[in-house]
Amino acid sequence: MYFFRVLRKPNLWPIDEGHKNYTEDDLFDVIELLYDLVSKPLEGRYHSWSDCGWHYDTFEKKAGQNEFRAQINDILQDYQEGYELSVDGEILALGDSGLQHLLKAEIPTFDKENVDSRLEQAILKFRRHRSSIQDRRDAVRELADILEYLRPKMKGLLLSNDESDLFNIANNFAIRHHNNKQKNDYDKPIWLSWIFYVYLSTIHVIVRLLIKNNIKV
Image (tube, rainbow, N blue to C red; front, side, top):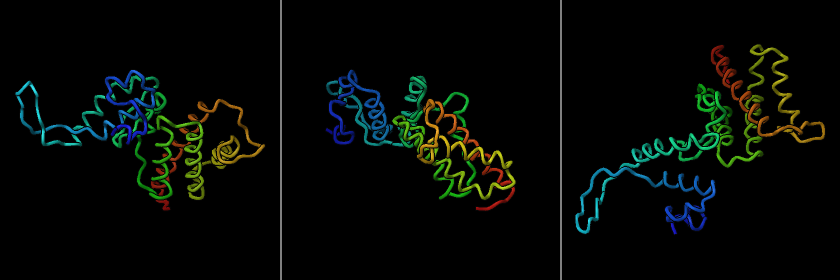
């Protein structure tokens, strides 16, 4: 009943029976819920009657979650294109090979409201295992909006043609607007991944250049 109440799905528990009919979403939901519940037992007593076993009364949640994450991520990283259970308890895509470091690279603190927090949310939306094409398009649009916010401060940091090309991509390829002049006959998953990484790496470069040149928000 607890699993049903929290996940709003029947027949997930007990796991040793329910797992036979799990979908991918079911499995990921159960893993995320177990992460929320797990704790490492520290102190207790052994109950020998009928080989009952240990009864613990002292637990440490963080240690249990760290151990659970380490073990489950050994498995998730080899599933399909690769996933991981985050510290916040969400299963996220690892990202394209060779570009995974970009998803986890910390951007220097610059503008929490208009850059830092929005960048974090865009990456999370793009990486969630349930992310749809629309979710990924929204994530790219969010990155384009961050670049738009930084655009007035970019003068002199990029060549004028480079600056224009960055925004032409977002404006002309059915990402930021919707009109009959836009191009939308392309392979969306591949295209959105490519432009996402282009924008993400550009934001990292721009923020670092702004900080280096002491240009404030």
